Amino acid sequence: MFRLQLPTDPRWVNLATQDLSEILSDHAWCEQKAASSAISLMVQFPEYPELVEQMSALAKEEMEHFQRVFSALKQRGLSLGRERKDAYVGALLDFQIKGQSAQNRLRDKLLMAALIEARSCERFRLLSEQLPDPELKAFYRELMESEAGHYTLFIALARNLTGRDATDERWKEWLDYEAGILLQFSEGKGIHG
Image 1 (cartoon, rainbow, N blue to C red):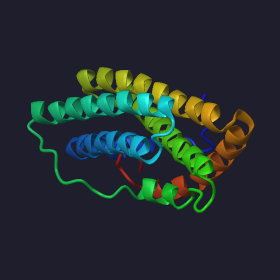
Image 2: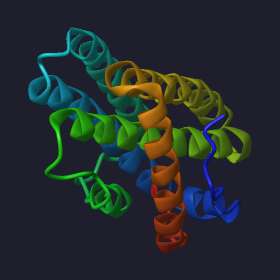
Image 3: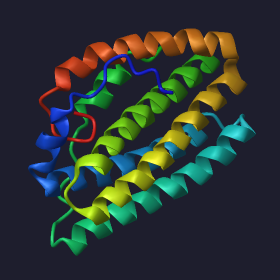
């Protein structure tokens, strides 16, 4: 479905689950950043009513996810911890088009968001299959399905707002780029590496 060029190393789950506090805290902050990104898209591109409507709903949903992950931390006697820089997302930002038309910049922002959602979905699937905690397994299964919907939303918005052919061509470039940077994060235990 996502056409990710490089699957996550199955050993990532072993690294991620060695410190449940770390993975849950990292995940919570990822949800907060996703909500912030949705709000940022509305602010930067208010001339697109469909985008504003969809991002408003998405921001709300992402904050609900943040609250649920935060609750999972609290239920296990774990703390949220400080927000940390996401080097994977930072590397993706380097690939975004700069200095071209607003429409091309918007397309890149939407495709980057789609890619983050696709990778998160893939990793949530691994967690849903391999975590020893049955409650967390079910939780990550549910969130995997939600992330797949977000991926679809971002791809559809990019196609609707900037054209299918141009979007699909640029999506292939994003997939190739992401495969290259994923190799840099193979030892990480966060949601994105």
